[in-house]
Length: 69
Image (cartoon, rainbow, N blue to C red):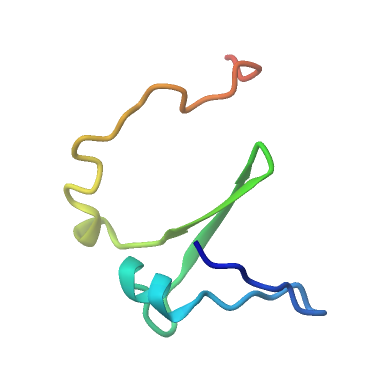
């Protein structure tokens, strides 16, 4: 686990080890998600590159209990 510091411009640097493990490269786009005060960054990929990424995905508890249609 790595700790990062938020700059005056509210920017953070993703540590090199984590960038390497996640396959993040210069100019990649990331989707920022905040849920239950937890921040997640998800790489934005093309449809072609996204094929098969949900294999084995656990869909339990993906929605808030307060979310309804």
